[in-house]
Image 1: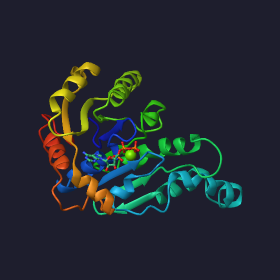
Image 2: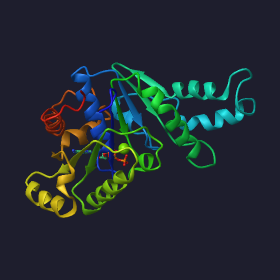
Image 3: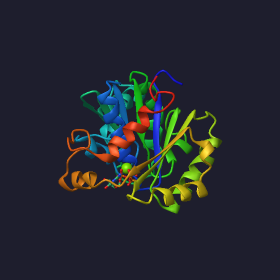
Image 4: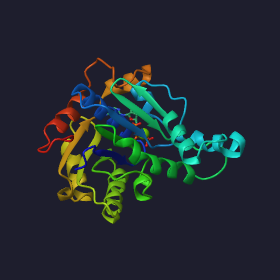
Length: 261
Ligand SMILES: Nc1ncnc2c1ncn2[C@@H]1O[C@H](COP(=O)(O)OP(=O)(O)OP(=O)(O)O)[C@@H](O)[C@H]1O
Ligand SMILES: [Mg+2]
């Protein structure tokens, strides 16, 4: 395990990756396992909202800047140094953690420039943090295209649907193809309606090889999260007890090997 471990949250769209990334950050903050680098690697950039932050700069915004500022870069500054400075500007500082937001590339073009910037700068950035949390794009683009740094722990998230479970099957296949092996796989199945745990468990076993996971947990559907989203409250400061968070916390603290050494 790296000194500064990287935990990636992956899964199909809408299953709760961002919510669980926020839960993880909340848990780490409560236990003073800081400083944390949170990376919102999803172009839709939703992590800031659930963490209660406003983001003004994203890596996606850098593309236009480098083109428009004197055909790229202000005179006298090497390009690499300029880009590092710009990436630093995409880091939003908060109490106990920083948030790096990838965002969408502005203007025409593909994500290559943005992805490469993220890849080239992530290793350098993560070293100074106790832990890095990557809230990934649906599927596993960043990891499969090697745009992110090596991942130590992968938190695979599904909701109780066959599609979400099948996505995780594919994620495991992709993860096996990576040159740098991921050490730990944790499975979280989120948004389980009360009373359907047993049926969901059967479905999970049908689709996934449970031996692949070091540990597994089911998180209930939680109306408190719904209310918080409706009221625009962030998940870090919410004082109302969230059953989903309590269940997640219990899962993390019961791991035989702590998540953060
Ligand atoms: N346990 C839960 N109980 C109730 N609502 C939940 C729960 N987990 C997540 N949600 C809600 O489900 C929606 C999707 O969650 P979230 O944004 O975390 O998913 P995501 O996987 O990050 O989605 P995307 O792929 O679009 O980034 C959100 O409105 C969130 O509040
Ligand atoms: Mg998300």
